[in-house]
Image 1 (cartoon, helix red, strand yellow):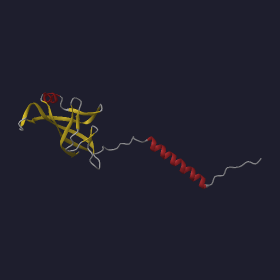
Image 2 (tube, one colour; image 1 turned 30 degrees about the vertical axis):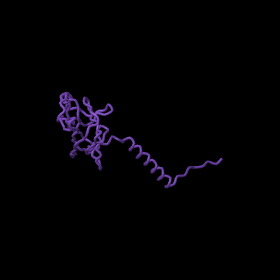
Image 3 (cartoon, one colour; image 1 turned 45 degrees about the vertical axis):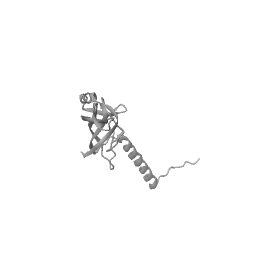
Image 4 (cartoon, one colour; image 1 turned 120 degrees about the horizontal axis):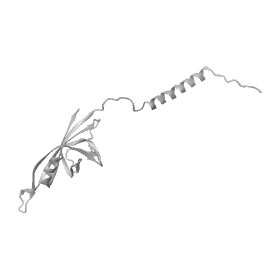
Length: 160
């Protein structure tokens, strides 16, 4: 019986060292994934005004009691809040063709402030809804307040 001796040449040794180094590097990266201290990501403050037309007059006082109120959607709270509400007169067209003030209804103007991540393209999505001037099917929803089919009147983006 002949015994075979294992022979290593320099190429085999280098190949084993390279493979071990790659395995060690991949293991190190996997072990330290997510533990790095990244700096804070840039954000934008967004202030916008939402108009709710023709709502019951009593809702103004009720809404004021619950401000500020944190935004929410699908049971989740978001980094934004309704900060104020104002009322303005609501007008209806009379039988005579004239605009008259409705004594039982008002328009409510809500001011909303939120902080969103800054991206290369501003797509302002707050509480799972896009915020744009003129959007007329916006649902304003917070912990205590909810109005649907509202209109966004203006939006202001401020760099933090």
